[in-house]
Image 1: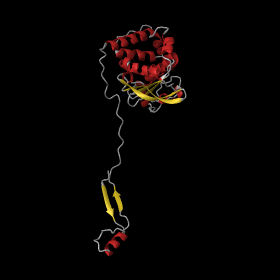
Image 2: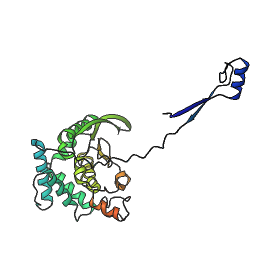
Image 3: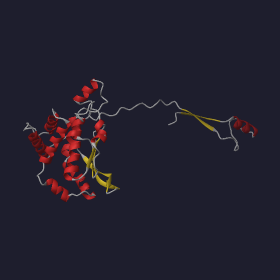
Image 4: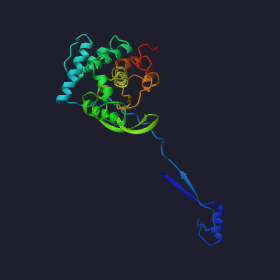
Length: 277
């Protein structure tokens, strides 16, 4: 938008206009081109603060039979991994069991505990049968993406299938094997970068990629709490993953401690308990 503009004529234009009997400021066809002089009084753009993804918390009812069953079943299996820790069958109780897994455990121990939970959810023959029934190809990757949007809304909230780029057999292809989580319920409820990474992202990627033989990459967005899942794409080593250097949330108890010490730009200490920060 141009707030102020002035059109000025060169001296030659004025002279030629007078010689041809024109009025002052009136240019002839052979006159030099008029110059457009723009004077802007617009103020510099202000920096817009990023919205706080925790400002408004999404509401869930968990009243449908599938949500009730899945929350109860996952909580029961997690409780056994914790030596029969009490649980109430609510989503909040499920998240609290996740926090309990983190307490007093190293990063590796946390991931191993979650791997034990995932392994206990299925019968012993499940991984072998999954590999046989769902070998890596476009159809099976897209099928698993579709199932995820239907069966795991209780865990992560609403999600949609989307088209993604996948490298398959040495060539780039377009597959509808991506899942876009609109606002991850688990990340919003936990408010912890470390829980997202060690209790969900890494164990789930490893479970699908190594146990089921179906590569999976998860890309959480810590500014919006969205998350992208790509079935058919192998995840990078954690040291090369952007999440490995993600700072704490301000709502996290660990993050508040880091901010108070002037270390808010450093990676979340729960991402890797063995890393020296």
